[in-house]
Image (cartoon, rainbow, N blue to C red; front, side, top):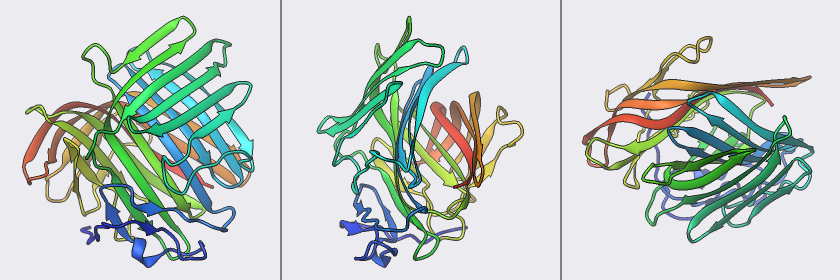
Length: 343
């Protein structure tokens, strides 16, 4: 389905003055963060999170800092793709006490201290700096030091998804941000984005009010096209259907090309290690991810539950460029997921 999405060009509040309803002026998309998430009230339905990820052909790392009203979640996860080894640590905080996220991403540091996990996220003129220390479940001590650069003019995919005037989501998706990182787990040390090996940063900023039952697809990737240009891929689905808005775009050398339509996703939930294909109706975008690792998580707790397949691998196919040209891509490092939640 084709959408007709208005481009936002000036700063705007997500909510009306009382912080409880969607501001009609916030409907649309932007290629830079312009929305202030002035959420007030709505306890139990309000969700705020910053999800950072680092991707290379050998290692995937993620750091989540989330407040879903009745629960706070802070965690670090990693996987070594060639061997399938993985680990990390996650801490849940009842009622999200001490988990604070700003109305505007990057305007305040994020910090968390626990005897099993410490996290700090700071933004400055150089980009985003991630620091974490934790104890693995097997007792090994681990640490992460990373920087996700944000080059001048590098665009983002910012969208307000309106289910209704009381249920809505602001998302800011960042893809293909150049990254460097050091991950140490016990005696193992992994370097990302060094020695002429590319690594890329991903960011998902979420602020909004959600329905109880949700399903979504999300995928992303980064690398270089056959002509040498840096390509970022940002695709989504399911959760945006029927809203007249999507989060689909490509980012080529930092320039965002918005895709105003719902994309077709083809994959098998029961066999997540088989290929995942995403395509547009006009054929301008057609990419397939070949998975190398499936991060499968399932949680059930009374009225709450979630299950996710998030697969990591490489994308191959073609995407539209900023001038309507067709870019052939091979082995963009990336991921794809389906999430099913009652929250």
